[in-house]
Image 1 (cartoon, one colour):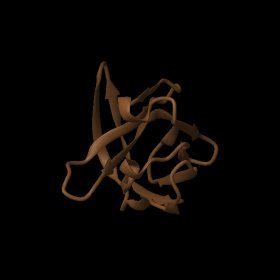
Image 2: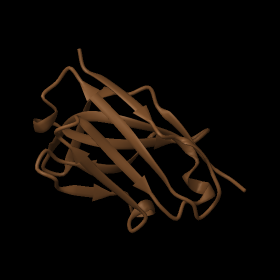
Image 3: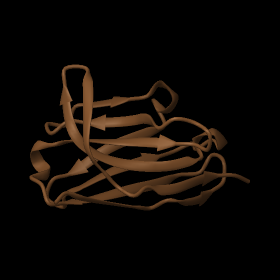
Length: 120
């Protein structure tokens, strides 16, 4: 059974930084694609960033230049470094494991989510 456990969320002031982590177990981490999604109150869950098994990345336009996704295959962990945070980045952030085929990502498993709040 695949398990994904997020950590690193919290309250941060505008302009600040946070790093989210997602520890994965129950799968061959090195061959799967990973993604971060987020869901703000009253809004649909949306893709934030993707990373393939070989390190290709893709970002939502709203976070390009501010967020960086990375992975450590030795630690079975994916990260999301978030800089220059804005109030509109406030959301529950979810880690996902899945398949990235051509331009489409298919999520197979989800974490429980971690809250990120950007406020002064």
